[in-house]
Each structure stands twice: as C-alpha cells, then as structure tokens.
Image (tube, rainbow, N blue to C red; front, side, top):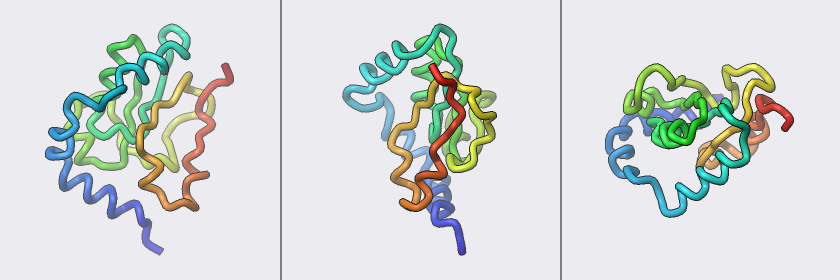
Length: 129
C-alpha cells in the first residue's frame, strides 16, 4: 500500500517557495506561544522542531536561546531554509535517540497523517523533567 503522506510531501516540494513567502511574519499569537514554550524549558535546552518546513519557527526558537534541530519530510521546504541545521525526516520515524531532547515544537503537523498513523508520531525522545 502506498504511503498516503508521500503525496503531501511532494505537494510541499512543489509549492515550497510560495508557501514560505505566504507565511512570512508567522501568525497572531506565535510570539506568545514561543515565549511560553521557552519558559518551560531549562537553559540551553535541546529541542526538535518537527515538521519545521523552512525552519522559520526553528530560527525563532534559536533566537530565544534554544538549541534546535529542524526536521521535515519535504526536501523542497528544507531547501527554503538555512542549511546545516535542518534534517529530512518523517515524523513517524525520527532519527533521534530516545530521551535526547528537552522539548518538542510541532505546529500543525499531525493533520498531515492518517489517523491510524498518529500514535506512531508519538515520540519518546524527550527527557522526563
């Protein structure tokens, strides 16, 4: 059976530049959410931005003093970001060791998975705080 998320990734590959341009500036309330997320983490925390797209929110998190790994399945979206700290990965099979992260930022991503695959996207990469 073909992976139903492959078409989603292919679509993002094709529209990446236009999508990124349309999202400049984020959305209302983003800064508050990022600040609350940051406040819940230890100093110098390591976080994953899962389904990061071009890494815009990854950059905003870095600007708040976090160490960030951005992960996205769409190579086209990743090419829109800054090289060196973005990784191509499927959120259902993250290339991260268990309990290696202090936090996970994941914005509007689970909607791209079939409902049956959502439990596979549950990660055990965060430390118990």
